[in-house]
Length: 342
Image 1: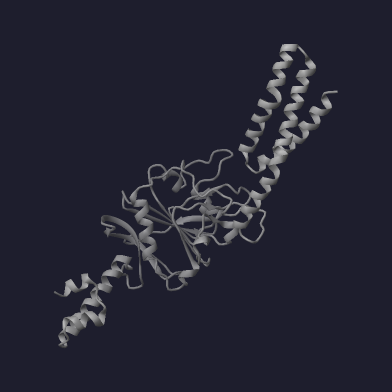
Image 2: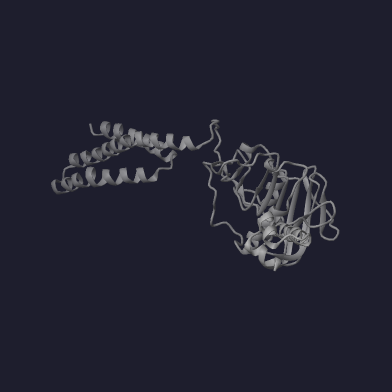
């Protein structure tokens, strides 16, 4: 007799277990089990023990299954509302594969050195990558961003230090800024990937690590075979070693570099090793240069150039006989610029 209610309520409870497991709602499952055990099972189990009654024990088990089924059923409407709310933040096009809204954007346990160099070097690359062959609103720069590359294994990803993608729209609104770069959504692989060598990632960056069974491939294999990134840069600032690999057919081949520079004819820009000071730190940096072999300016360089032009214009006006007050008014000089005229 007791098997029918136990199996009946148990079947409902186990089906709902699967439903909430799919939603990764462990809290709902935990709360349901605790409530059913404390309210439905334990009191009757204690009575069964004191009375030595197997029927009361069966009743306790039935009560446990019934309460689990009822509490999980009550939680279903709330889970549907939560799913609807999440759907409002997802892209309008319905896709069977997860989007960047569904996939994790951070993995704190991943190896790497989150030092200042890994912050400054990508900034310098982005500031000086001043393309003339492509509209800048059709270029995406990624820094330490997850790249999801295999739709058959949606959770597999790599996290390049810096990469550039041509032909994808940049976000126009803050709400549209990418959480990750998901290749089956974007449809375009990076044109260039840069990895900054550090002790914890060197073997994987250079393709020297062996792939473990049932584990994702290393960075080299992902860039070469999965994403087919045309150019792969590896930079070791400690050894002043700038290495560039180009995808020829199906494999990367290293390009010999003269003076630690390379000209990319596809984008009419060159990349090389520059010794100088950036963000107050003097050392070796990767930096873009133009057709005239001159390093392209940083934001600080541009500001200084603009300052020099304004002061030169002010001095020219003063030379014509204008008063200092007239020059300040015409050029709308700041207090700092006024002091430079003194």
